[in-house]
Image 1 (tube, rainbow, N blue to C red):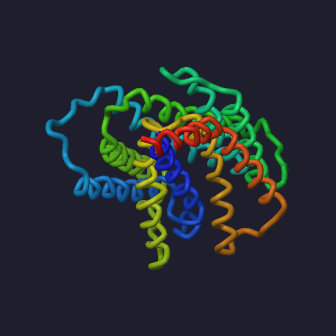
Image 2 (spheres, one colour):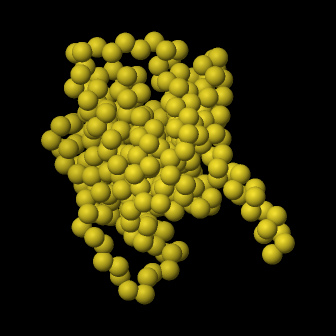
Length: 297
């Protein structure tokens, strides 16, 4: 379980590169960018099949798995982009980033799972740290004019948390299925682009490299790693630790000169790291207790 949880957290680390690569990719419209990067993400899955032994017999995938996967990946991005178009990005991002908390709380409803106080406390600490980052010092003012955008951001959080929790109900479905979820998301994003946007291509090699980076990691390998994490890892720990994504993203932007260091970053680091450690308390202690027995085996 610990290994799968770490693999799942590698998705969070890759998502931390999303803002940097997106900023560096130029002015490509969001649905066009989604179509291109998810096409690259599909190629990641196809390439991985060269290194993963094929099953002896193809497994029949339940219809609900297809619905959960396609609606999860495409729905999240559709509602997120819609929220950003209809509400200020700070407020929309904060609402959309309720999904880790919803995962931790919703995990109590999953078979074989138990929600402990440290999971909730860790998720709330992570939420507080995220608030410091996305609100730039707590300057947050909700405006009724943006009610539709706020609602879309809330749906966005609900869609991704539901996708993550429902995926756990199908642990026998191979992660290779994510390849086709990415392909479907690419096709649907292309349809939205053709209906809603004008086509704009990157204007330099650097921008093309940023688009490639997006497709290989945050919009590619990350979804495969996340699938492993939510199906086989500790989902409460993974949900709470997911709050590290905006922190890591901010640190990456600072490292490349896109953001300035501040007390908010230090405070957010303490809150998010403390929340992740608190949420992982039971997992860490269980692993520590198992070491002497393993040594004497």
